[in-house]
Amino acid sequence: MAKNITIFSLLVGLLFALPTQAWEIGEFKNGMSRADVEQALKTWKFGKTVPVGNDGLFAYDLPNSPAGRRFLFSFCNDKLVSFDQEVEPAFRHFVVIASNYSNLYGNPLKVIPTTSVVATGEKNLLAMFWRKGADFMGVKYVLYPAGEQLSMSWQVNNNCWQAPR
Image (cartoon, rainbow, N blue to C red; front, top):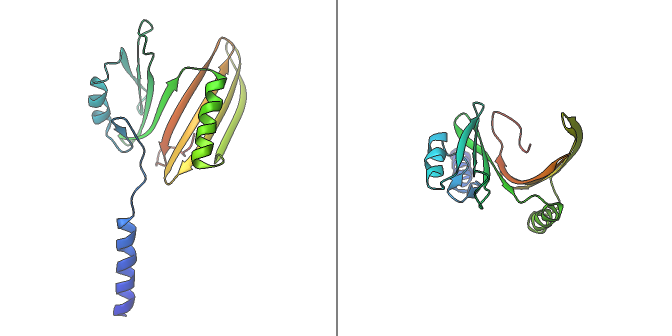
């Protein structure tokens, strides 16, 4: 009996000793509180930061800024669980990012191709997600009638929605 308890204790100890996977992008890392994200954003000097519903925060530069940064933070129970960064939209850039992720992480875990109709016409989305430990990395390309959007995302599983999305 004592031997079984010792083995069980060793296994539990090993589980706690394993390194946890957690994405970290600049100063932002999963699990940060919303207040910590808002504090860190002050040093980035975005043109505008606006809440998106109860669980999101959108930080972006104004149109006259050459930086053109756009970050979307998603929270679950006040903890950061998702970070999206928009980049210069071009299908060529999508291919480069997807190729780099495939070289690093293998074939995508999930591919989401959708077509829908929005008020201005047809909307086409192609999203791909890879997994590394508990983290999901993704790239999303959206083609709208009047433009396009390209973003990279980092997510973790949470109790509010199923990752990746």
